[in-house]
Amino acid sequence: MPELSRSQLLVYGAIGVALLLVGARWVRSASADSGPTDGVESAVAPAAQEGSESDSSFAMDAGGGDVVVHVAGAVRDPGVYRLPAGARVADGVERAGGATAQAAVDGINLAARLADGQQVIVPATATGAAGVAAGATAASGAADGPISLGTATVEQLDTIEGIGPVTAQGIIEFRDEHGGLSSVEDLDEISGIGPATMDALRGALQP
Image (cartoon, rainbow, N blue to C red; front, side, top):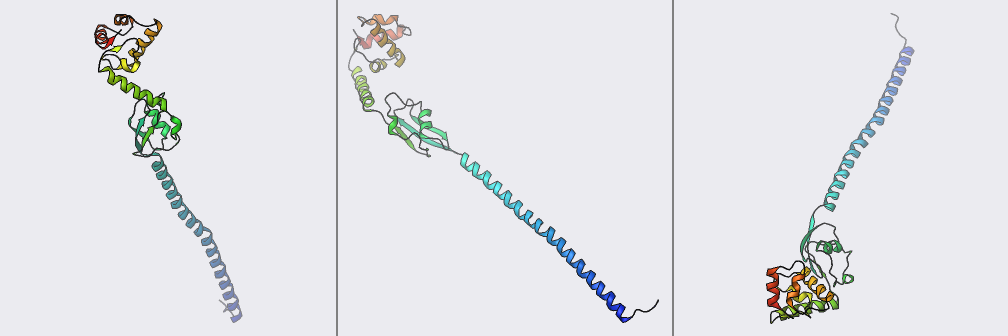
């Protein structure tokens, strides 16, 4: 094999160096293309996962839990009730049977959000408050003696054993339809009044 001259060696050496530089640049370019992409995906994935977990936990915190409130005042069934978190005062009033005819619902903010342990008091109008006081007075008076059949109110009749609000209202309507009642015995014609109730009416009413 013929020996290479010095000039040929230099040429071959230069070519080899050039090839090495080109190869190194290619490897570096390939690493730059793949490396940052992998890094971005690995950084974004945990962030997305963490965001998803955070949103889920926020949704659970926002929607979970109940509040216990006391609804009182001019409502049909006052008491303590459990309502879902985020409920409004209007929901509490509705849960307590709704406002009565004497309620002054404009006196409270029905749109306010309920808080745990809150007491909601539905105020009554001045007329309603007077009616309640009159009913209480009539009830106390009923214990003192017989009630007049001609002037008895629903509240007074409701104090008699065996008579509820519905039957008391029926007695008032029956009396109005017949232009008054001359005898307690006339009440026997009213539906829902049996012998036991008639005995109670005879002892508590007078013509």
